[in-house]
Length: 111
Length: 125
Image (cartoon, rainbow over all chains, first blue to last red; front, side, top):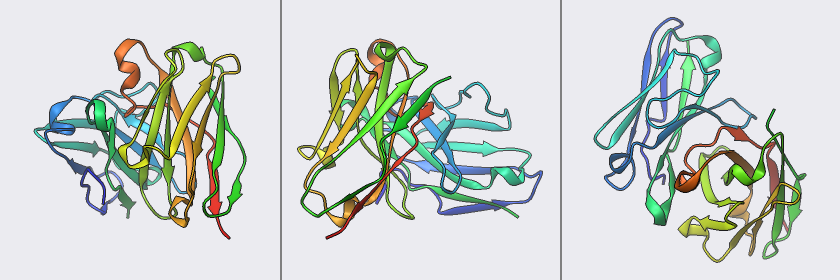
């Protein structure tokens, strides 16, 4: 059982927007503005899409955005494209004892 | 261009240990932080631990304390992860990952922007 809770799956049509939630506790998401999101295509290594809640690394499309409210972080993908179909994982810093917690992952299907 | 090249696939017997290497190129290793993550077949990502090569200090997930050892050789820009007392539950793809860092943010292992090639570990008698 993962420390962070994500929906198992979400879906959307090309051009639409979707949001993936990630719920933690005061000890991780709620305690730090240190949340990241990873995209993983089958058989590939993860790729960071968002860090520090809402920052995009260079080269990541501005269709990807992140936010946080309390103990819940969210990833929004606007203007869905077929290549966005992948698994998405949230991740949070969790202090000097636990360090890192991951969500269980969300499978995004672009219909 | 940052590259993290990992050692090849391993087949191990239950109870044995596995050591995986992760060689970095295109980076200033002394300014880098490295983390290790694994993914069992069909499962999610799981953090094992990380190391800041410049300081030589490693940090581990509580679940793996006493069973995992992470080290780094700055002379060869290579990080290592050794996992002992293997069971079938340890069958997974193991990834190293890293990013540039400074000071205390080197311990924020939650964010890595370069990932290794992955190493498949099979545990079978």
